[in-house]
Image (cartoon, rainbow, N blue to C red):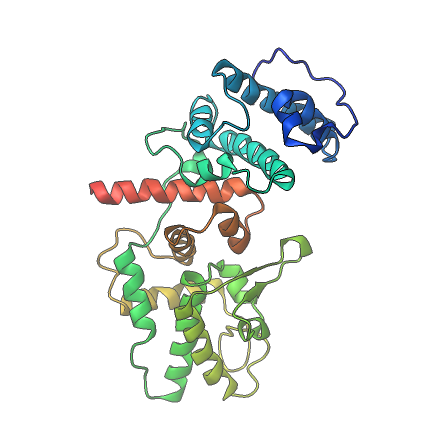
Length: 329
C-alpha cells in the first residue's frame, strides 16, 4: 500500500487529555487524533499508517472547508470514492473514520456517525478496482429462499429411519440458510447449543476470541425444534447436533453436501440455478437477508464470525452487485 502524502509528518504523539472534547477535535483534528492514537496501544508501524490516513482525510476536508462536525455520510462517501485504492484499503479508511466518530459520540451522544451511514449506503455507481477477493459471490434469489423455507415445512416420510434423516437434513439446511453457519461449524456443533432456549445459537472456536453467537431466523428455530424432538426419541445418538446416524458419529463433509443437494432438489430450485446452491451460498444468503432487514455490517460481521469489518462490507457490496446483475438479467 502506498500511503498518501501529507504535509504533516509523523512525530511522537502528545500524551495528554487534549482529545476529551468534541470542540478540541474541531479546532485541531490532527493533534486531537494524535492524542487519541497514543492511547490505543497500536504498534508503531500501524500507528504511522493510521496517522497518515487520518491526515489525508482531514486535508481533504480542509480543501472543501468542511469540519468533522459538518461532515455527513455523503461527504465521507465522496472521500472514499476519491481514493485510488483497492476495496480492502478503502474499508480500512472507513473503519478508522468510524472509530473516531464513535469516540466523539462518547462526549456528545447525539453526534451522528457519518462513516457508519456511508458504510451502509455506498455509492452504487462507484467502480472499485477488482482484486481476486472481489470475484462474484453466489446468493439465493428471494424466491429460491422462500421455496426452501416452504420445503422445511413439507410433509415428512412415514418410516422412522427416513424421517430421522429427513429432519436432520432439514435442520442442517436451516443452520446454513437461517443461521449462517459454515460447513465445519455445523459438523462440530454440540447438540446442547442447538437446544438453547434463549433463541441464540453459540458457535465455539478453538480460539476463544472467535467464539460467537448468532440469532437464527424463526423458520430455522422451528426446524431445529422438530429435529431435536426426533433426535431425543432415539437414545445413544451422541453429543453432536448433526450426527451421521443414530450411532452418533460425525458427518463427513461430502455427506453434508449430498444432504444439502437433496434438500435443494426437493425444494424444486435446482433447475432454475446455473450454480450449485452450496452451504456457502446459503450462508451468504443469510447475510443478505440480514442486510435486507436493515441490519448493520457490524452485526453481520459479529453473527457470521468475521474477524474484520471489511469482510462484512465486502460481502454487502458483492450482494448489491449481485442484485444489480439479477435486475439486468
